[in-house]
Image 1 (tube, one colour):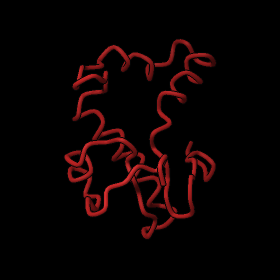
Image 2 (image 1 turned 180 degrees about the vertical axis):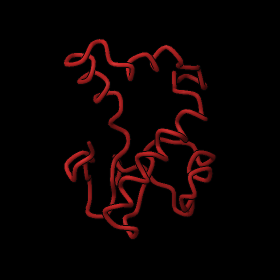
Image 3 (image 1 turned 45 degrees about the vertical axis):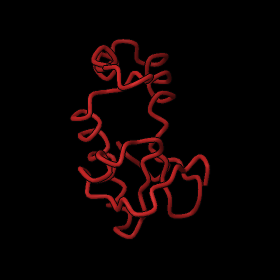
Image 4 (image 1 turned 135 degrees about the vertical axis):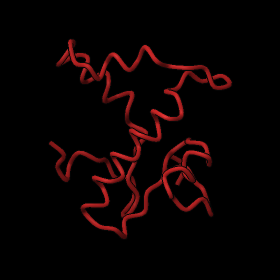
Length: 103
C-alpha cells in the first residue's frame, strides 16, 4: 500500500526516487524471502555503475511516478542521477535536468 509518507521529499514539490537501495536493505532485513529482492540478480554494468536494466528502471519509475501523480498532477518529478534517456522515456521534462541531492 502506498501512503503519503511512502515518498521522501527533499524540497517542496520535488520527490526523491533515489532511495531504492536503502529500501531494498530494509526489505531484506524484514522480508528476506520477498520477490523484490530477486530483481537484484538482474543488475547490469553501465560504465562504472551496476544498475537495473533500462527497461526495468523505466517500469519501476513509471509505477512510482503514476502513484505520485495521484496526489497531484502538478508535482515536479526529478530522477536523481538518472540518464536523460530514462527521463524522456517516462515523459519527464528534460530541460534543466538536476540532481535533488545537489539542489
